[in-house]
Length: 388
Image (cartoon, rainbow, N blue to C red; front, side, top):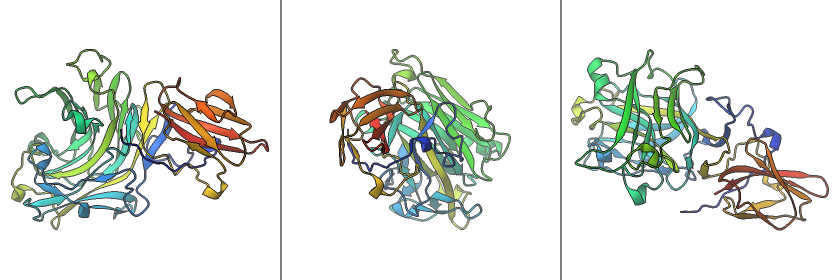
C-alpha cells in the first residue's frame, strides 16, 4: 500500500459536524459524518487527491477521445457561477484520435470502503455520442485487473437505448461489474431509468449508499429525501465467489470522465457525434463528498479534511502521528498531555488515556476517530485520526 504524509488540521470538536459546510448535498444525516470532500474552489485541481489521466487507449470501449491534462480545469460554471471541476470534450485531432476530453481519478490518493458518496453534477447535453460518468473501481485494480477488482458505476448517460428513444436527457443508469471474463463475458448488473425530468438542464445530485448488505443509488436525494433508489443490488453474500459480494467489500477509488463515442452510445464515427456546440461540450462537478458512520468494516485512506473550521497552524501545539495509524500513535508537544480522550466520529467516547507516550489502538476497527488532548492548563486540542 502506498503511504502518504498528511497535514493535521486543528478542529473544534463541537464544529466537527461541519454546520454550514455540508449544506450542499444530503449532508451529515443518519449518523453519517463527513470524511473527505472536494469543493473544487481553490482555482486548481487538488493533486493531493486526484490523478489526471493522459491516454488514448479508448477505455476498453472503443471510445474516440484522447484524455489530456489540457481538458481538465477548475473554474466557474457559466450560468450558476459555481466553482467546479470542468471536463471539456473537444472535436479535435490529437494522438491519432478525432476528439480530446478529460478523466481524473483518486487511485492511490483517496479510497474508501462502505459509506455514502455523492456528487453534484451538471451534465452536458449528450445528444448523440457523449458518455459522461461518475464511478469507482476497486483499489486493487493495478494488481487484480478488471473486472476482478470490481466496478461501481454511480452514473452513466448516453447509452444507445436513450438515443433510439429520443430520451437522451432523461435516460441514465447505474451498474456494477465483478468476477472474471469467460468467453468474452463477465458478471454484471445494470439498471437503466428514464427519468421524469431532464438531468441535463442544471446540477443534479447523484448518491451512492454502500454498506455490508446493499449498493443503492439515488437521484436528487437532497430534494427528494424519501425517494426510492434508481439502482439497488444485494451484496450481503460474501462467501459465494460467483456473487458480487465477494468483490465489492473492499476500498474503491473515484473516477469522473467525459467519454466521446464508443460501445456505450454505439457511435464510432466522430461525424455522427451531434453533442458538440462550437466543437466543445463540458461536464461540471460542483462537489464530491464521502461520508462514513465510523462503524466496523468501514475503511478510509486519504487526505485529512482541511475545511472543518481550520485554525492557523501557529495555534496547534501538538502533533498526532503517524496518521493514518495502524496499531499505535504518538503525541508530541510542549508538555505531556494531562489526558487524551478518544471519540468515535459520531462523538461517542471510546476511552480516556493518561499520558503514556504511545497510545494503543490495535483493538479498534478501521475508520475515523477524534483525539482530544487536554493539557495541565486545561487547554484542549482535537485532531482527526484515521485508523487503518
